[in-house]
Amino acid sequence: MANEKDSVTPYNSEQTKKIQVASMFNKIARKYDFLNHLLSLGIDRLWRRKTVRMISAISPHNLLDIATGTGDLAFTAAKKMPATSITGVDISEGMLEIAMEKAGKMGISQQVTFRYGDSENLDFERDSFDAIMVAFGVRNFENLDKGLEEMFRVLKHGGSVFILEFSKPRIFPFKTIFNTYFKYVLPRIGRFTSKDHKAYSYLFESVQAFPDFEKFVSIMEKAGFHSNKFYPMTFGICTIYTGKK
Image (cartoon, rainbow, N blue to C red; front, side, top):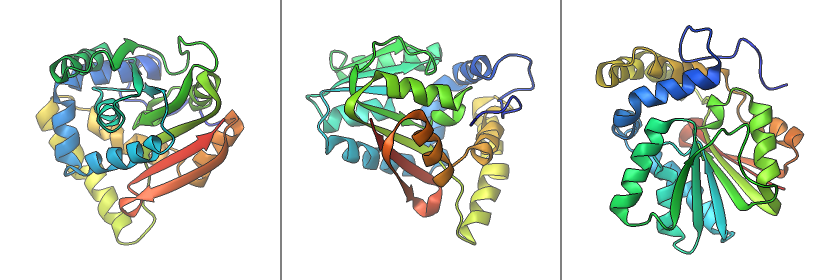
């Protein structure tokens, strides 16, 4: 199994990881976009655009964005694929509120819709979507196996999944630079800016615990996906995983 009972959680609490993650994102929702771009030096935009270029190559009619957050990946996809219907789901109502505000300002609320949703219990019929995408979300699943199985269930036969997630660089000295920045620098900036004393420490801890590269591909295969591949980016800080049903 991909999950252990002692998996990394945002807070030292008896609550489930799912509840803690939702609470964490509700707390930092208003600062989330600003901090994402600041702390990644804007590179996160490039990662999303690369993911969307890969998705656009298959021209999906309808696309599901799991753990959509404030909708950045959904909006990037909407700009690249104006004929594609996009549905974003998330367990954080605070993040969804911002996503819907942004969609309204952009005038694309008809193309991109948002709804509350649990990634491990998706409220969609089997074989509902041509493609599924996730950006920096699977690392936060309480049960990674269950989340991937749900993606497989709602994906149409012949459809593809695209998962963008942080990974651990393997190349020296970039590995050391990455660990120092994520473990010491980023949490201090995040705490000062977001006023949440745990959220950005959790980011480093969750990345360290996440089964990346070949390990994650193996978990995808167990969930039923085939033709799975991974594409490390920016020295392995981030990786795009793809698979088919």
